[in-house]
Length: 161
Ligand code: FES
Ligand code: FES
Image 1 (spheres, rainbow, N blue to C red):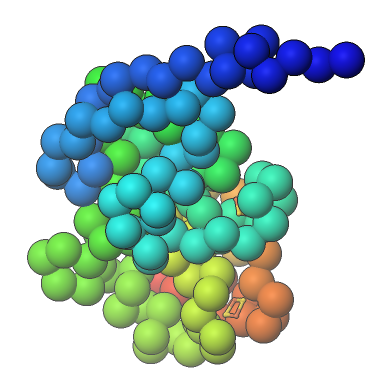
Image 2 (image 1 turned 180 degrees about the vertical axis):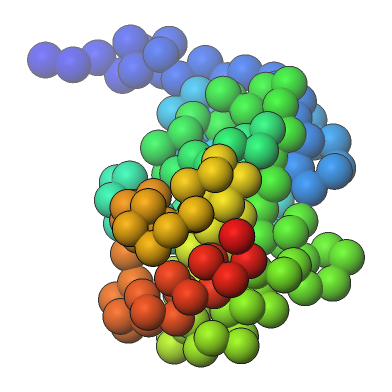
């Protein structure tokens, strides 16, 4: 049978420091905590959404040093020494061109997937994967929209690219 003492040993907390949207944070973390939970529950950054919590929907997409990651599958301790950008960081100095394009192209309905779509879209464009419709569709395919706003999302990403 399992032994609680062993589990407690595995869960030793770690002190880590990382940046979020330009602000430095120092936190004591359980190594099992996801970056998504830390952003939402410790730092009150609720723009990043929890959909599946299994890496399947893209709702939790953020940037880690400019590269997109699904934050539900990223241990928060992995952000140590790095810079995390969330949707709140993108909109800090006024709407990002992709946020404006989402509004213009009606690329959202309920809006639940939208922060993840925008974080993914910005990265997709920066990666050079939004040069044509097929490529943009493929490289945005990790972001699911249950409302089916895909046509508008594609138009918005292509326009900004
Ligand atoms: Fe992270 Fe769905 S909540 S991929
Ligand atoms: Fe509703 Fe995408 S706008 S899930």
